[in-house]
Image (cartoon, rainbow, N blue to C red; front, side):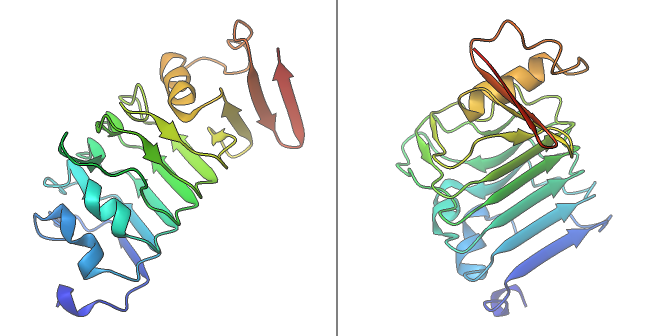
Length: 199
């Protein structure tokens, strides 16, 4: 059945309490199984034991049409992309524009791959209640069009790059973001129609 889903463009799995797997145990099978996939939403999948990581490094490169990835309330998820240290992949999800990470208590980081990730079209990142994520990735990140991270529906935060911003959110969880930022050399905080830049 799965191999007959080559025309699928959107995949949404929500509140499937007994679901333990998405694409067997083979994280590198996303691209051959779903070559046209442009939207993936996984929400409230409490028994998804095998999904400690979701994509292989190679499949993240080959999912050329994926534009939206939303992961919410997947309690066992620890990493989104895994990769061997010998793999050499730079561009990931070449068309992705929006990434949402919400209510992921065990997520340590997006990837522990130490190489450089080029994310050419990423425009929006939303992060909420991801308490274990101290940094976005252990490697370098190139996100040329990303200018902020949404931390609530009305507030956006940006500290020069994605890793620094995620680290700041982690270190200041439970505190007022505006109040604790005045020691930073450069910060942009957007709230509704107002923009504050502190030099």
